[in-house]
Image (tube, rainbow, N blue to C red; front, side):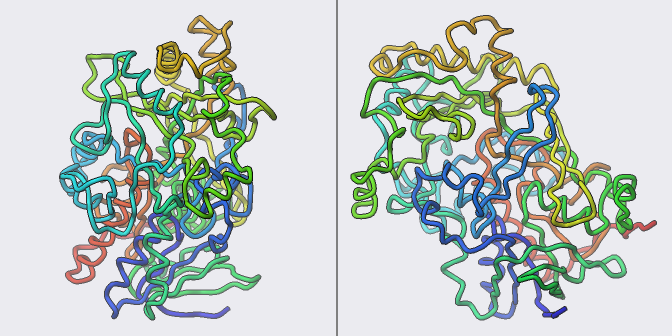
Length: 541
């Protein structure tokens, strides 16, 4: 083994890890090692916004699958997760949505000081350069570029007009004063290209002498001595290496890999760890639990309008238009339009989100018809009641963990998605979409009853790519980290990524993950400058 020492070791160069690498090394006296299991983000399709489905099931994807889902016809659902610099920000649909202000106020109400919306807004603004305009709710000089779409399809604009005719308010900024309404999504793009967390935060600072970034480096264990994290072991180029951390180890490996690594390191439910022969370092039964995710259910239509869709994008003219002018269909994020609505007017906030794709988008875009053109309206329940778990498959770090989201276990989750299909159909029936919408492919004209729509939900739903909660913050027995993101029961170890969210936000999760990391950087710096009282003492078997 080779051993090196740093102030901080950050595990995972995804959306959160790139932020931390940048912010912590702003102090030239602070050394950071950033470890990424994937390879550099050299794949051309990462740059081309509309090509993100082409990244699925490639070397840039962890290509996880769930356990068979009892309430989804026993299916093992595919979970793409970014495995490259930028993580999921390098293979997502680039939608910039923060969630509803009440989501963050709820986190604070649970006892997590400093996580209320008014405080988090400053971190969102710090992260962002908002191209469309200078506004009260946006930043003007942050690393992450947020833009209007360059060349949206006419059908997407028609969707918005149709939704307005169906009774929903137009909203041109879901991250402004109010989230509710329908409109075009803002995207994390710059000059018609994807602007990932690696582009925004990491690449501009790779020349800092106090930052070391390694790819192809999969962390296998956090080393813990006398109740304190001292570093990590990782595999790179077939060799086991050790990196020491005199300050902290920070896990930013995501809602699947962060709890997986904690368990491999002896931090988790003692009974579960013992099943796999892992010595218990910290009794932490909440590790891997509280798994939450958003589900898509799509209503899909044929269309005869040959200029309205992306289905045949990628021809010579598209390529020329993108490479030369950075315009045209290849700049599309696919999920161009959408909105946030209430299924019950008595509710205080939206509980349903729409994503409109001017194309077929069936089973992650991997099962689209070979010919023809389509339009897809995805409905998502924003706050599902079902809870799942990530567990070990074995004590081998290279065995994928078991992922059981327990989708649709709660009847309310099914009912909301059924309502989502009904509302998608209502929008599709409005006059502005009449020139685009043809025969219904999914669920199909025969699926009119709630029971038939529910069967479509169970047969065809899939992840919206928003897993969270498996290392949730709080002070209850199920919490894994405190509100400063320090792991309960061990010093010198934090988690800073989507896994710390105690509950799902009402929207896409990339922008919140970046804001979490921005706040984490402040917490780490503050604690280092004036060490606070440490977490509770470790317990061992």
